[in-house]
Image (cartoon, rainbow, N blue to C red; front, side, top):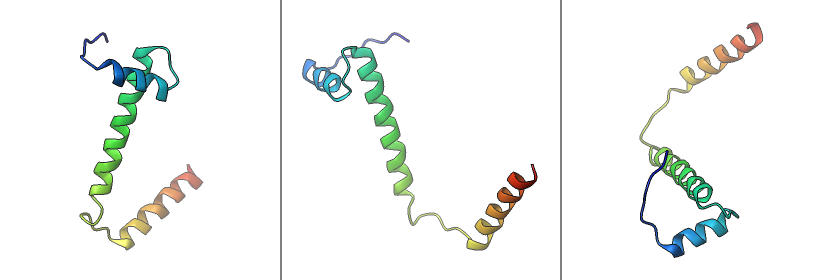
Length: 72
């Protein structure tokens, strides 16, 4: 997809250097993918302590998955 964005030359140059790329589009795409991945990881980390898991249920699920792999 072709998109026009305003990005400073300094940021583009640094992005190209960080991603060892002479192609601006590839460098920007890689940087955006990394930013998305990083944000998703941050969101998962923010969930720490907010979700409670039942250890017995988790163990049952793990056993079911192992059984499925072994039998399927």
